[in-house]
Length: 359
Ligand code: FES
Image 1 (cartoon, helix red, strand yellow):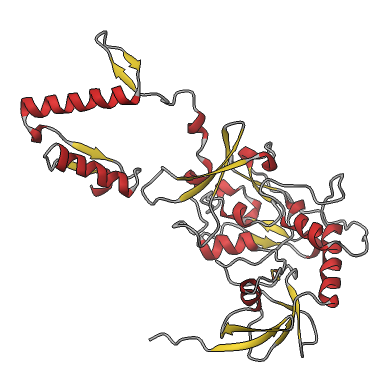
Image 2 (cartoon, protein in one colour):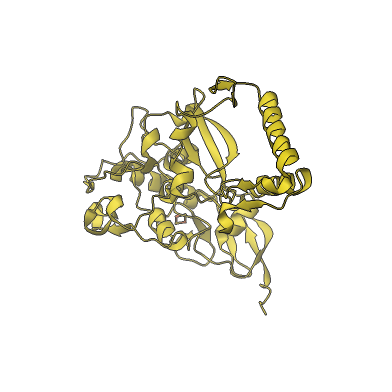
């Protein structure tokens, strides 16, 4: 029998709030609508407290504490926006900027999936401008077609490593090196294709600075993208995808945020990267019907469905319903598969229906 967590009360920015034993201060802050900046926090992995962005002031604690890893306690008095916390955030951002390339706007360069570090700089400002740090990080030879890694944009939050390990259980990447040379590496700095990497691209999705980016869309400006929600059609799971389009072309595929859809923020290699077929010139975009000349001709959907129905009815009348067979695909959704068996049984009167996943 699971125990119900104990309810407790604490003071957050001068207000009494309720929490459950085992929650972190960040959980409580988010529920209370407090803006606590984070870089290395992710609900799907264990907290690491590495980026220090989420530090808050907890009465009785000598130092600021990482709210993403610090557990609530009854009677705690917590401040998320005291002068001390604000000073810390600005100095921390100054230090991050000293270690990361700047663009002409004096801010870290925008990367493919957005840059939370850049956003924090805009939202919270910085402290004193610090001299740039010489921190040459090792690049690895990457010949994979999907995942680009720019070590200079990496803030070493280790989120990609934790995702790869704790969510995907793949452990293809790891933190390696010491001091200013620390970087995200593979075993022997092999390219990802020579590791256990499954190319799911989850590292890209969780990376807060865009140091991991989709290679195929490196050239596109993500600020120009329009986003359309769709269902991945590579298998019947029904993962939800966000199709990012530019000039009416899909340039990138991402998952809706974790916790919102069946795929919980995850995608596989096909769902995330196999998008060329959408614009492929061989793709059929109009229905075709074979004419008396034996060739296929474009037609309307209405006519195509009429011709298909007439053909099927003709076989049924001539040879009986069991002369027909209906085969559906595990690439279809559950609803589409249901409709196909209904068409077979209810409309044509045969149980000759099958689906490839059933064999
Ligand atoms: Fe808490 Fe990084 S988000 S230390």
